[in-house]
Amino acid sequence: MPSRRVDLLSPSSPPRPVEEATLDSAVVWLCGREPALATLAARNGSPPLWYRPPGFASIVTLILEQQVSLASARAAVKRLEATIGRVEPTSFLTLDEAALRTIGFSRQKAEYCRDLAAAIRDGSVDLEHIDGLGAADAGRLLTAIRGVGPWTAECYLLFCLRMPDAWPSGDRALQVSIAEVFSLETVPDAASVDAMAEAWRPWRSVAARMLWHEYLSSRDAAPVALGTTEQRG
Image 1 (cartoon, rainbow, N blue to C red):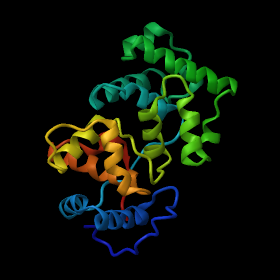
Image 2: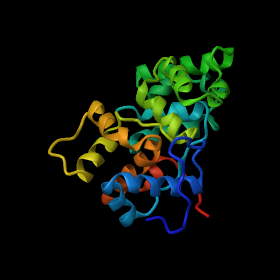
Image 3: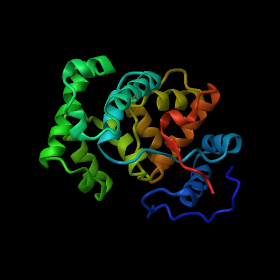
Image 4: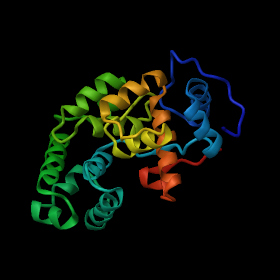
């Protein structure tokens, strides 16, 4: 369980973004709703407040992470940063497809990221505007971007905007963690994961953090792989 005493939050009006105190309070609330999550909290405490800065670079990273290991995606990101420095639309567009393939982009992912960079540069995509929207509207605008599907959009809402109820049900590690925590015979699909998580609204993003934390801890994996861990007070 969380080490600090916290007041229970009203489940009907979660704040945005999730901060340190609200993370702990949401864990307490979830523990009262779901015994399996209470077991995780007793073993692991509150999960890290993983965070990625909103913007172009984080979407590029998420696109690289689609259907590949975190390690290979992070290696590609490091090569990209070594090539152009700060990952911004203008600098990214200096790289042609051959250069991006050398860095680790597939042809399709290179096209997605170049299209996004061009759209931001010409003003047809405004990520700062998306950052100020509610979850439903932000999700719709994100998935309208070529190459950004539901998983990428939900992860952006969860890690970059720290929305309280983002839920990337298509995430394989999340599905595997649920199977292990709930002793399921098979790994559930996205629809089944969505159904299970209905009881965890409006704090599904915190439940996801708890389940990822358990997944990584049980494998002695580095939690920082999911993003920057903000320091706890």
